Image 1 (cartoon, rainbow over the protein chains, first blue to last red):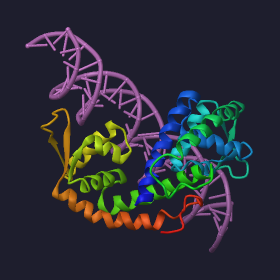
Image 2: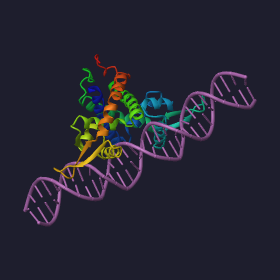
Image 3: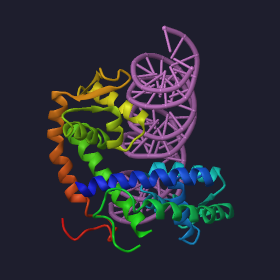
Image 4: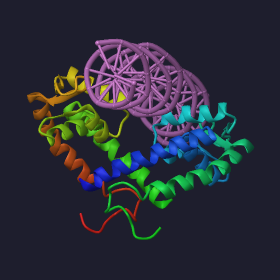
Length: 127
Length: 127
DNA sequence: GGACACTACATGCGCACGCATCTAATGACA
DNA sequence: TGTCATTAGATGCGTGCGCATGTAGTGTCC
């Protein structure tokens, strides 16, 4: 129970802070950032299903997330020749740049907030 | 970073499992349960602002949450004589019963899922 | 007492979500 | 090759969210 409430509190606190900072300074949300990060660390392209796993959202939400990112010019949809049902989501130049800009913000907010909250058992000594 | 992704993964996993179990077996969501729990552990009544804190939602979302619970007959809004801007949210008989029914489900799902996920640093030795 | 800043909660609005479903492509099997 | 179950992703729909704002009650200062 203590763990659970700690988890809720910490998640809410960090997500809120991240959402505000990323939205204000870079015009993207937490899920958008996670998606960009996944793409940036996956050779700049991966399947939609991989993103679904990365952002912890439903398949439909991921589809719309990709649509938003594409509308923003941060990613592109590419047909997958191997399996033409699927798509490759590829990071554009603008997307890679946006990610690099947002990354320090992301890390800084994490640093500030992830240790807060009342979840003592989840706080490791290091880091 | 490891902590962060662990937090995200764990939160998503537990919330999903809880949402499904609570919704299927008791017709309430995670936030609804948290609100009922807060009320049950607060002498069956508390201010709307207290609920806002408990459920980690915005004030407007809490207002609608209370409206849903009231529509379901699980809580009632009572005028606060001390400060007539505010309200007391009170747990009804049905609400108290629903909470008692849902509580074992909630605890069981927590027990099953809160240790899962890939966040090793957040996993204490005990439990 | 009257004006005004402030607070508690409600509500209009736009947006992102999940669920169910649709479409198109794949793979297996006859 | 034709049929059919399965899979990847897109989309209609209803719902819950946050933000901004509205409404009503409170406290202060004159």
